[in-house]
Amino acid sequence: MRLRDRILMSLEGVTIALDSLRANKVRAALTISGVAIGVFVVVAMAATVHGIRQSFAQDMEEFGATTFQVRRTNPGFNNCNPTNENCPERRYPAVSLTEWRTIQQLPEVHRAMAWLPGSGTVTYRDRQVKNVGYDAQSTEWIETDVADVAPGRTFSESEHDAAAPVALVNDTLAATLFGDSDPIGKEIELDGLRLTVIGVFQTKAGFLKSLDGRGPDTPRIILPMLTAYQRLNAWRRALLLLVRPRADISRDEAMDVVTATLRGMRGLRPTEPNTFFLVGQDKILETFNSLFGAIFLVGIGLSAVGLLVGGVGVVAIMMISVTERTREIGVRKALGATRATILWQFLVEAATLTSLGAGLGLILGGGLAWVIRANSSIPASVPPAAIVASLAAAALTGVAFGMLPATRASKLDPVEALRHE
Image (cartoon, rainbow, N blue to C red; front, side):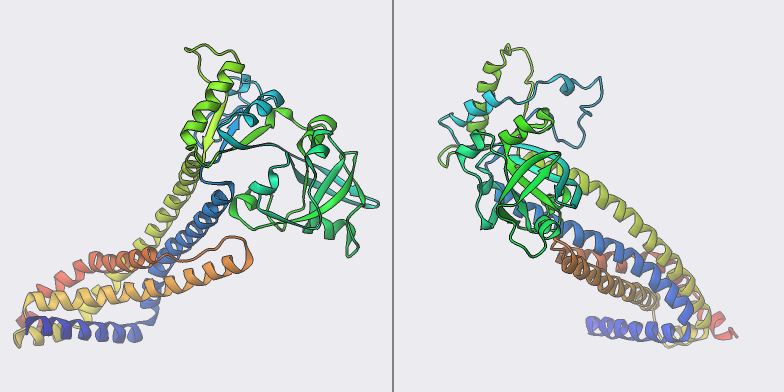
């Protein structure tokens, strides 16, 4: 019976709260808006980060769970800037072609792709596109990039080893330079180097690719690594390797072998630190979490401000409600209503106000997630945990800030309340 009474009181509190909304539209709107903004920020941030994480995981899957990088510098979020004179990484030697060839021949290694990124100006007749990024890669790129080549083909190993002046362009660059005409066999210039187009590639959308300019909508070129290394003014110290162990070899075992090989080739004594970095997918994920964790904390701070504004509005509107309904409270107490009953009723009213704001914020946040998903490569979606957390935070805000007016209402003397005009 007590549970039934509590449910009925809760429903009555919701009804009274809705009546209060209609009677005090401006005050209620301000309260709801503050909560809605706070929840909107949380939901929008959670949806975006959730979508980016999904896209990030897909990109990691393409490279392979056991794949790791061999780099001159550490890509970690909190590491020193290699352009700083005091950073030891500045003096580390670049990954050399000899080291790459040696790692390729290790029995524990299935593939070792050499990758030299860069950018330049691409020209075709009277058309010019500036700041076009290129990926100068060895022949294994087709496995790691999971790209489709049509029309045309990728470059062969003999073309790569001969530093042949050939290249593949993506759909976006092909449309910009050649329009509707067939790009295969046409000659373009990349920073003055004449290259024959042998294929058009289509890269799958992904957050990492969009972040570093390799998304499907960004003009891009792929060419043999040795072509860029020997015939372009490429920054050779940027060369890195993408190593995939054999299927029956664990990543840690392969990393140990590569580490020992590079230390031996560089003549490092046992007491000397490595002058290179081996970066696994877990390290990249750690960097991702550090970056977007900080961004998400900023979002939480902004949402807290919104909830605080909404909470202040709850206090104001509920205090006014207590004043306006003093006689009603006196009548209810005279008829036997307890302090707990009055307290519960006003807390339900406060939680109803903030929950309405949370619902509005969820709708707006879900709408933004849909817009992001429809217009970018980020599969933004609102995780169920964000919905539960937002509703819970809004309800707790209502209870916390509604406690003062609810307590005041519950402590009113029935005789004095009945005399109130």
